Each structure stands twice: as C-alpha cells, then as structure tokens.
Length: 508
Ligand SMILES: [Zn+2]
Image 1 (tube, rainbow, N blue to C red):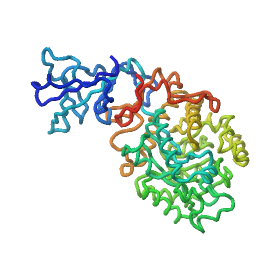
Image 2 (image 1 turned 90 degrees about the vertical axis):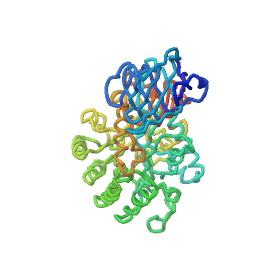
Image 3 (image 1 turned 120 degrees about the horizontal axis):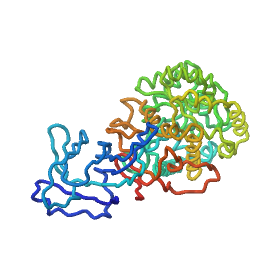
C-alpha cells in the first residue's frame, strides 16, 4: 500500500455514509490521525529494533504501538487512550474506508469528519526525531567577529529562521539553544509563522568581563561599567555579569524573556578573544547565584566548562548540564552520577580538521588555543567509553548554511565512530529528551508528552528512514567527510519527517 489512502467518512449515522465523497489522493497529507504500518522501531533507548510494528498517531501524540492495528473497517478511536476498536463493518461497504468516531474523555463522544493517513512503512525504521542538545540558531555569522561587525538584527533573525528550517528538514525536531537568543523564534515556530524544531532557548549567555560571553573588540568600553556596548550585548545574545547581583539580574532577565534554562560561561573557550580556555571564570558563589535563580523558576543551569576545576565546581554548586566537558574523567563521572547531571561534548573538537572552522581559522589566537586544548584532552574518549555518562549529542555550529550541515553530519559520524551507533543514537534522542525536560513542569513549553522516544503518550516527533541506523549511521546523515563533504539538500534516506503529528517531508 502506498502513502495515499486518505479516506474519510463521518458519521452522523451509517445511513448517510455512502453519500460521502472520497478525498483525492493528491490532497495535502492530513495529520489528525496517521497510521504507520509495518515499521521496525528504534525507540530511542534499545540496542535493537522492534520488528514489524504499527504506530498510530492521533493529533500530535503517539497513541498506540502494536502489531496489526487495523487499516479498514469501521473503528472508534479513543483519543484519550489511543485505543482502536473495531466496531462494525456494514455488509457491502468499501473495506478500505475508515469510519471514525472520536471518544474524547469519559463522557464525551465526538463524531466528526476525520482524515486518516495510512503510511506503509514497508519495513523501514521508525525512530524519534533528532534533538540538538547544544546549538545556536541566532549565532549564524561565520565567527563572533563577523556577527559583531557585519550582521544587524534583521539579517541574524532571517538567517536564524532559515537555519531552523534547515535543521528540521535534516530531522532535528527539537533544539536546545545554548545561548544567544530569546524566545522570539521559538514563538514564531510554535505559532506556525515559520517552520522549525521545538526550541528550548537559553537567552543571553551570562559570563564575566573577558570571558567566553564577552563579544567586544579590544577597545570597546567595559559593559559592566558603561552598559551594553557590543552588538552581542545590544542584541540580547550576551550579558556581561561580573558579580552575584549582576548574575541574578541576568538570569531573571533571561527567564522574563522566555528562556527555558540559563547558560553560564564558567570557563574559558576557544573561539572567543580574551579568555584562555583554562580560565576559571566564575567563582562558586557566582555559579550558585545562577543556580538559585534557575531553581526559583523550577529550571536549571547549563554551563560551558572545559577545565576540570570548573567542571567540578559547577557540579558541586548545582549545575545540571555540563557543556563541552573536555576534561571528563573518573572523578567527574562519579560526581555527575551523584548529582544526576548530564554532559554534552562536540566531538569534532577532536578532529585534526578543527582548525578549518572559520571561527578558529580567522583568529591566530583561537587557532593556538584550539591546538593546546586538543593536546590536553587526550583521555576524553577512553574515559567516556569507560564511565558511560549521560551524554547528549551536540554539534554546536555557530555558522550558517552548508557549513552547519557538514559539521552536524560529521559530528553524528564521529559520535558513532568513537562510541558506537547505539550510544550516538541514544544521545541524539532519549538522552537529549531527558535533558530538555530538566526545564521543569512550569517552564517546559512541551509538557504534553515525552520527547526523544517512541512510546505511547510521547510526542509524535518521528522519522522514517531507509535502512537501520543502529548498523549504518549514514542513513540519518552521518558523514565521514567534514569540509570536503559534497553540498546536499536534505537527507535522501530520511523519507518522512514528522513533528508534533504534522508531516514536513514525505518522499515515499
Ligand atoms: Zn556553544
């Protein structure tokens, strides 16, 4: 059976059914109820596929996973439980017609016209939509200096919308933004103004003067003393916070602007101008100030942390997700477990090609920092294999267009190469799903169901791909090549992309 079969019927009484028109097969694919038939499921967690299942999506949630969910006859869909019950097939009636009455809750049975979209998976793999655990949609110049010197707000906003659409069309249905934007794009996507993933924005980066959050050039006056002087600060991408009080103000300002979590820069980085990567940027007291405000909102703090000293200090003072975490070792693993913390690491930092990223190649200081940092992170991969931390996928691309597609494809490949396909796939789905849920019951904008898993009750964020990603990571885009990879438009083996029950791509 092909994707077609858009059939409706409805139903004040059976006596009027035969007069209802058939919907044309070329009509826009409906999304109210979609039934995937005959798929092998990667559920986001298991190391093997569930073979030969059907998945029923009602509105925006996965309602039923079972073998042989019926495709014809007269049925009743219970929207609350997702149960499908065969009720009655009038004799002589078209056996491919779905007749649906929707039971919504205990008392109310709603009968209305409803479109059914039946998709024959034909043995393909159905899996959760991918989740970017640490990305930057609004950071879309070629480097910090490029953003600072060449891009104004309208260009950055338009590029962020294009970057969001590209991410969705590459299978990323959720995106945790790790700093540099408020909730404007997220709201525009949720309202259907533009197309993109679900977004968990962190608002402006919080960091002290001269830190990884300081985007000024060398001669720009200090922002703590003289107010917002850099473009990053004026655009709400960064917030220079040099004391406990300033950090609290910055965190509150971010939440007020719609952030779902707070991002601090507790250590130095590579692509920024003034901070050695070893810099221990925030004191314990300052980290606690950010955590205190995040706690008050029921949310959490994510922290950019390279050095072991900074990593341990973050963990001891309540940070829940460690970003980059390059000096991960046994001590960090033990403390992470104790605290229930997560980490994300961009594996391309270990590539010999790292220096080709424009944000690094354009600055001799950054290139030098990258080289010394790489040399210091020698045991990282072995340690992750050994201690198996809760590890979220993170491509961390601050560029735009093809450069981000290539970086993300290569990041997927490297995660699988170093830690295995199953580990990489979990980090792209269920682990990152747990991580975004740390934003808590109050602030989490997507609270109706889980994200990153194929389970009954989870959000219908679904990919249907040719092949088995547990055996071949290229079917979700993984690419051995980085800068030399050919330009591409979408991922051919990704046949269906569904977010929130709505289909954005279907090449079956
Ligand atoms: Zn980042």
